[in-house]
Image 1 (tube, rainbow, N blue to C red):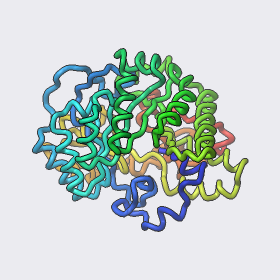
Image 2 (cartoon, rainbow, N blue to C red):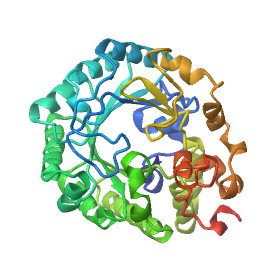
Image 3 (spheres, rainbow, N blue to C red):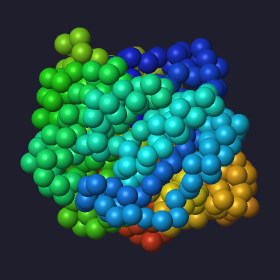
Image 4 (cartoon, rainbow, N blue to C red):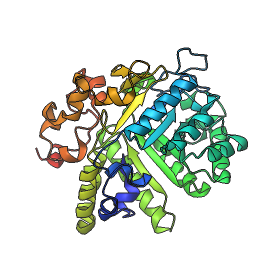
Length: 394
């Protein structure tokens, strides 16, 4: 992820992560991306069932009862292992995680193990009571997916009323004192709402928003042909995000804004700053190098509802092992798995533009699962890198 507000607006300096020694266990959550040890943030899909039908769902979830999910006892063993392994954050996801009855107990258990607990949800089930229970369980953050203003979001999510229910969830979190933010996946069908979402964030006092570049996985694979932005559209959208973030900060409203799943955003932001503020640009380049780019298979991992371990939450066809057979820590440490080993030494595997890009230490080859989805080759160029040949040094 690229912290637009951190980098462009200067809310984080290169000295900030250095002050903590850049160790995952010591860093505050907003600096975790700059750690040196890259202990994995683990996405746990606690269940597959969902009450919505989102067009881009990587898990192809539906509102049906699925079988084979990890039991409560298996979940506690997983969380104990993650904590002992040093995972700084566990992100409870789904499907819709709030459909799992023991979610609050699992959150509290993770917090007791001294991990940060985060929930990724569609927000429609967060009543006032639910928000209070999330707070009391010790949750650090709840990310609520909102993929446009009301008409756009409800079309995208396949259920009328989803927007209003999600906004009720946002308000209930704010009222309960639970840190909450929005998650917006950018497609051609909703990019026109980006400005309106900034208006909403400002109006409602939402402290954080993450803009996700589309990854072609699950039902998202079906969006490949008609939902991809052109490179020019992507550049214009990233510029708009930067401009609106700066405008909020200039008003004294320091909303945390990030872009996610396209590390070309880092060099793009740096090159813009180099024209506008060369002194700040130098500090930003140091932070981008600390970030290190895409971290699938190293700094982020995924445990599916049935215990299968994946290199990240989108790479559902890549199986590294199962926590019912071996602990996550053992699976994650076993580099006899060819894909895992290559992801951790990917620079020598990359092909095409990615292999010779001047920003390789900043981007780390971007999203390999996206390259595979489009070209069939894990190590081909990321097709959604929108930097020009000149910008990457060709």
